[in-house]
Amino acid sequence: MAATTEFELVSPGRLLLSEPVEMVVVPGTDGDFGALPQHAPMLSTVRPGVINIYKGGRVARRLFVAGGFAEVTQERCTVLADEAIDLAEITPAEVQQRLQAADDQVKEARNPEEKAAADRARGLAQALAEAASAAAHAHA
Image 1 (tube, helix red, strand yellow):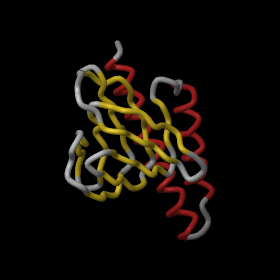
Image 2 (cartoon, rainbow, N blue to C red):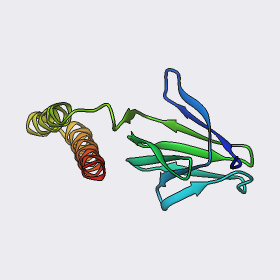
Image 3 (spheres, helix red, strand yellow):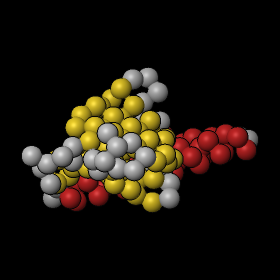
Image 4 (spheres, helix red, strand yellow):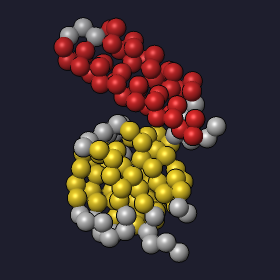
């Protein structure tokens, strides 16, 4: 049996996932990084992107995160995510709805603060659309 490290995914409201994994690849702000058992301790900010969870020598699960922070120790990798979505559970219609809502928010922005928030929402929706598309092609 392969050595494992504990992976925890936490949202602002609750613990979303806690399980042993062989490796987890996280979209860090300075680039993707893999956390393995006995990893050197580190902290990183997380950009919007996909977390790949490895079990049995392959990607067992892909989760889209909207950004956040990651802490890696020798025993675990904890990601504190603003939002997390299992790519296996999101539909193309849901992705399209998020893109449309973000476009509407951009059109309705009236001041610089609203425009900045709308631009962030649009970028996040686009990142989710790209991740969902890549996940769909990986399973085709």
